Image (cartoon, rainbow, N blue to C red; front, side, top):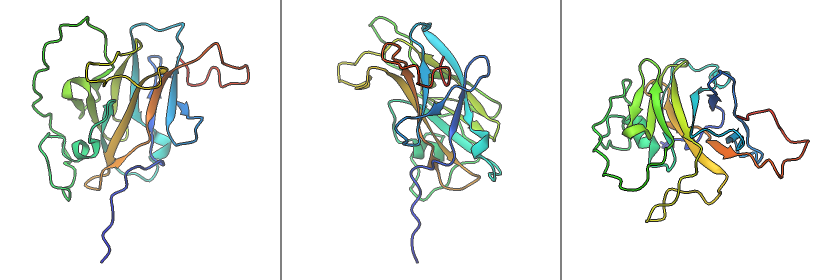
Length: 212
């Protein structure tokens, strides 16, 4: 008997990002890697921008039910969290719980540095919730969603060298791990929040699409 390996990513089911006005703002990546970009206009950048993120309904045709955990960078083992939202380590063959439970999260260590807003999940639709002090959120159902606040000020690197992307134009990234009923957990393509380079932008670019 052949053992089926759980897929690591399913490009057919994707996330959709909407701004505060309800307009969809994500566009396909120019790299054709399956990921999507949300362009941020640097000329209009309040400290925090609010977005509603849900599963793209156009990619959910044929899906009866779905639950997912969504995470903001830096990423950890999201597939384990999505299959076991209670926070305890589960064996590799375990199936996702149909009712995610909010884990007990240790209080963060005091931060003596200057406070800078951080990108985080702040709200979720009915049946969902926020995990890990806003680093993760979860939602249930095809209409489930989470609210994500994007920090438009670039996070500086910490003493250990973490916390900043090599690409200075990238503000943040999110990815979701989802399952249908008790099926295996699968990762969606990423959503990348990126500053638009207005100076190098050509008239033939996709101005006006996926831009905030």
